[in-house]
Structures are given as structure tokens and as C-alpha cells.
Image (cartoon, rainbow, N blue to C red; front, top):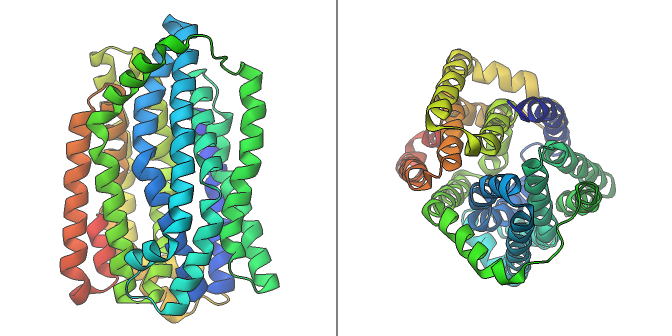
Amino acid sequence: MRGARSLLLAGVAGKLVGVFRELLLAALYGTSGPVAAYRVAQTATLIPINFFTADALSAGFLPNETRMLRANEAQAAAFYIVVNRLILGISVVLTLGLLVARDLWVRVLAPGLDQSITTLAASMLVAMALGVPFYLSTAMGSYLEMAHGRFALASARASVQSVGLIVGTVAAYVLDRPTLLAWGFTLAYAVLAIWTRIRLRAIGLPVPQRPGEYPGLLREFWISIRPILLVPIALQGSFAVERSVASLISSDTVAALDYARLVTETAMALVAAPLGLAVLANIGAMTAADTTSLVEDLLRRCLLIFVPISVALVTLASPVTQLVFVRGAFDAESSKTTASILTGLAFGLWAQVTSYVMVKALSGRHRNGLAAICVGAGSLVMIGSDLMLYRSLGPLALGLGAS
């Protein structure tokens, strides 16, 4: 499939760099307060970004832009310009909102954490909020490049972000300034924004030529994303509740949650995300029968691989955690908390991979309403499980809720 191989290979490289980043963070800081603060700031930044743009942007822009490029390049250029301007406006509003409401937003996401940790998280949020325009502009650039059959930007995003965070982690530790953990995020996307501009010039930046079409194209974009708006509401709501519940368990749990997710999200980065994006970029021009055949084949392969992996991780969560993370500041208590979350996550790893591919396939066939119902149902179950089980099961409840 066009682009799948490029994204898969880049996913491997990006994930390797990301694993090194997390291992470095674990060795230098373990599950200490600065890591908990960083996790909260990261969640506080990404929730509003993804709420307004993530699934809606890819599902609403990419299939339509691909179709328009084949039929009418001038219309495709106009469509990119109008959506890009909309996203730029949203990014400015989000940045200002995060800067003004940083203290309140952090307290909402982490009600159980100490004041010292939430104060540090608010300072980190300021740094990451300034990277929001870069983050969203590079996302738009990568989708435009994918519509043209090129995948360099989409392939590089994860690696560039990880390198920036590695630089920030080392600087924070050496200079004893934890806020530099967050500045690595903004640095990475500022550099990526420059490269995005260079890449788009290579394919020819769209030139505003048909402003009279903008209102109609904006309506078309709205019609495409309207059915799927429930998806970011459900997903980001579940992530917010998950982080909040983690803070009620302990600061260690807040820090450990992403360490545990590193193991399961490796599968997402290496397999599900490349397949999902490649499906989204290609099936707009395929017949319904061909789409069904393609997706069924992909699902069979995913299940054959990931059901055994899920079983193995449930059984070996503790040894895997010790092997991967235990060194430096990552002590026995950190290992216990992380392994507990990982055990819960492993139960549903196979479902996480296959559901992601199916949701992207539905979006590519403009079945966004059905995709939204599926994602919304899963998110509600996750929220309910977290709230009902965290007092009795502790960190394990967070993994089981996601599964």
C-alpha cells in the first residue's frame, strides 16, 4: 500500500528514539515529582490540541484533499488554504487560552497532586503552549504532503519530537531546571516547522487564487468533520479523567502511566498508526468492496500477531518492566506501579490496534458517524471503569479501563 512502508520504517526509527527518550527520563528522574509535573503539562497541552484538531483534521482534510488533487488542483489548493487558515486561528486561540488558564487547567487535571508539583506543571505548560502553533502547522504540512504521495514529514514527526525531548531532558538534569523538560517539545516543533516549510516549497505551496470558493470549501470541511466531532470529545475526555484519577492514586502513578503506555504504544506507532494513516490516504479512491477486502486482510494479520503478544505481556508485565526500566532513579516502587498499569493495558492491546485501523477505515469511507459512536462507547466504558475501580485496584484500574 502506498506510503505504508515509508510510515512503517519511519515508525520503527521514531519509536526507537522515543524508547531511548523514555528510558533516559526514567533513569534520570524515575517517577519523581518533575516527571509527574511534565506528564500533567503534556496532557494539558495535547488534550485541547487533539480535542479541536487531531481526528477531525486527518479525517476531514486528507481524503478530501487527495480526491480534489486528482480532479481539480486549483480547488485542492484553495481547500488547503482555507483549512490551514482555520487551524492557524485555532492554534493562536489555544495558546492564549492555555497561558491564561494554566493554573486552573492543571488543578482540574491533577486534583490529587501536591501544590509544588502542580506549580511546576503550570510552568511547564507555559513552555509547551508556545509550541502549539508549530505543532498544528506541521501536522497540516504533513497531511498536505501525504495527499501528494510523499511521507517524509509524517515519517519524521515522532523522531524530531523525541530528539527535542531528549535535548530538553539532558539540559533539565544537567542544569537542574526541570522546566527544560517541556521546552524540548517546543524546540522540536519549531525546528520541524522550518523543515515543513522547505518540504512544502518543494511540492509547490498552494497560492491563493480562488477566494470565492473558500466559504463553500469551509462548509465541505465542516460537513466532513461534523459526524466525527464526538471522537475527540470522547477520547480527550477519557484521557483527562484518566490523568485526574491517576493523580488521586499517587504522583508515582501519574509518572508511571506513560512508562507503561510506552510498551503498548510501541505497537500503535509501529503498526496501527502507519496502517491507519495509509488506509486513510488511499481508500478514498477505492470501491467499497476493495476497502472491505483490504481492511479484513489487515485485521486478520493484526490479530494473528497481537493476540499472542497481549497474552505474553499480561503474563510477563513485571519482568518486562524490570528489564526495560529499572536503572538509575527508577526504583522498585516505580517498577511495581508501572508493571501494574502495564498488566491492565496488555489485556486489550490486540483490540487497541485493530480498532484504530477500523476507525481510520470508516473515516476514509466517510462513515464518521459510525466511527464516532464506536469510539464514544469505548471512551465511556474507560471513564466508568477508571472511576469505579481505582480505589480497589489502584494503578491496575487505569490499564484495565483502557483495555
